[in-house]
Image 1 (cartoon, rainbow, N blue to C red):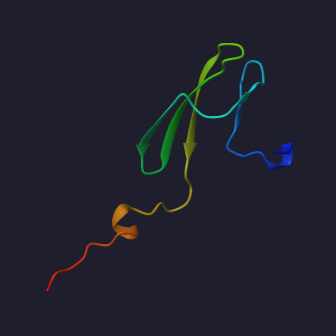
Image 2: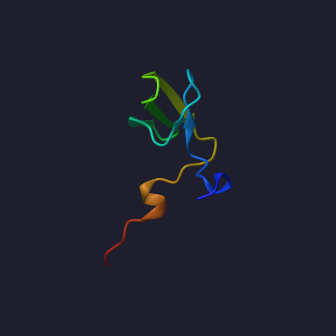
Length: 70
């Protein structure tokens, strides 16, 4: 895999700049916010990030509408 083919989902450590592949932990706080806990194995730093969606998020009912029985 070349550097240009790497996933854009990777994060850099806020302390040492090391590349992090995935968060240590994540939590959906509501329909528009996801909270992540990151841990850098290179320097031992822990930090948190929040991601907010600005687009309309589909609910389960939008994706899988309830079936009506006759």
